Length: 116
Image (cartoon, rainbow, N blue to C red; front, side):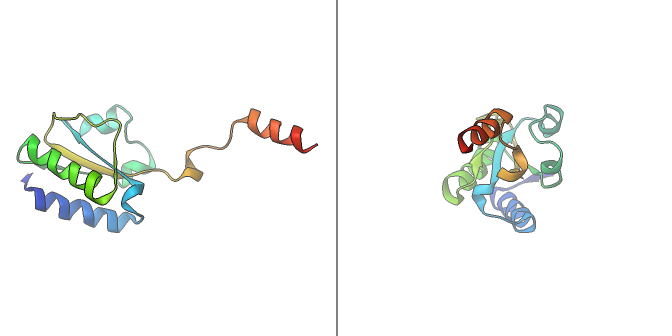
């Protein structure tokens, strides 16, 4: 279903409230096809559960929604964003720093070595 700027913003804001956190903990982007988000691995696993995407009337509306969240709300622009192409706006909550990965073994080893 094609949606207006205000309708998409309202839906994404509802998803952000549902998923919790600050706007800066979310990524927003534009895609030509929402299936490419999960097929290409841009959004996978736990993030997929908090993924929302909506089809805008035009690519210009999609860009306006993305720019609203990035420039006015403080969300991050997703690295997989297609720039000016595409009518689908998507958002997902980023993984927390603790969930991303543990320090590299060399770092832990170096820390122990210095502590000795």
